[in-house]
Length: 62
Image 1: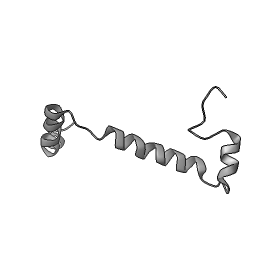
Image 2 (image 1 turned 90 degrees about the horizontal axis):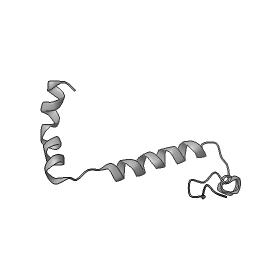
Image 3 (image 1 turned 45 degrees about the horizontal axis):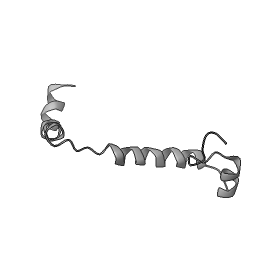
Image 4 (image 1 turned 45 degrees about the vertical axis):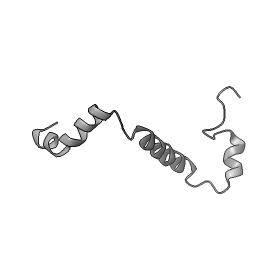
């Protein structure tokens, strides 16, 4: 991290330490959406994807 980066983000970093809030959950959901979208690229029917058991909501022990 450079000094300029620190100066640009100083307020946000100090607020994170003081208040404990972050956008980790939102960023994680955004990433999950992108992964699911990439996995579904080229699939013509959702039924086909779910039939394969490749849904992220399918339990691993099935």
